[in-house]
Length: 401
Image (tube, rainbow, N blue to C red; front, side, top):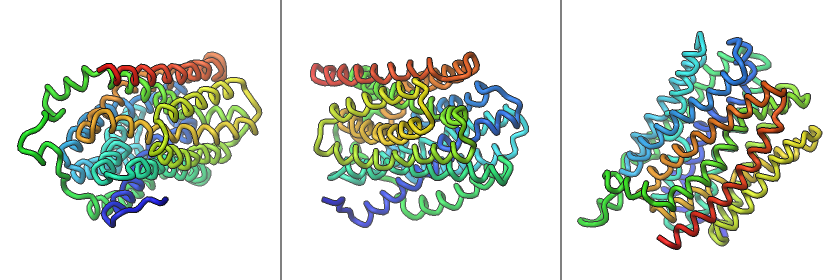
């Protein structure tokens, strides 16, 4: 049966799709394509340029906690406009960066912007707008990042054949301006009512030190965050190197960016399928299938197969990893509640940061030492199996608390 929505719900869903697509696509989606052009432009090492992902994630973590607090208080429009302006400025700054210091500052600005207009903000909008069919709505919403990442990755690869990378960044700054600001102003309400305002008395919000402390003292949260940290951290860290990995197999820039785009786009049916199944199937079962499959795919990458086999693995990888965000958003929503979702997600990003940074640096050092990624890919495969252990520990902790 289809997803039945009111006009308000459909408008919010469109905003969630579009803002995520632009925010994620113009930051994490395009970085793998710009990796080698930036190395040449700044005469920098693979480790130096790929560290831009770490800077973005560090800023994203700080931004997630701050944005999450205001989103949990209902200030959606204010938060999202701030994020949009930051992203526009970050892309413009990157376009004229004279050195790695300025480029790094632009990465920090971009990272700060993403939580306010990316999956965190979108999940907050959907959680507050949909009471029924929330799993399906989050599944549809989660198609935004892979759609945007694929579109802008492929577009970047082709634009770089004809324009300087600085001109491409400036163009993307203009795209962010015309797509984000008008729709946020027109559709997103200035403020949502929050549960603690709906009753004269009730449990303390996690905005208070006691409420946040309660969240941090829950083993269920930490085990759940471990799932997200390992799955998303490894996937995000490896994505920085995918285009370079494909280039090492003999694919040119346009071919690599196109295959990367297909991988991103396969996250669209992945997010939708996992989101739909979550309304009728155990989230634990879905996570086990997803994480086990992802582990096998990374082991396949490590085996050094032919370009044709790698292309197939990239396609399947995109589908499988596309299920991470919708399943984790549902998991947090069930276990932490809608008025704590923003801060729980922000803290989850904090836990994920060292994993992602380690994945980026491990892959970069592996390449610089051996000219390939075999060892790091096997480590990533093992890490995804460890995430299944965190899942079962989270379930056990939930039953015993």
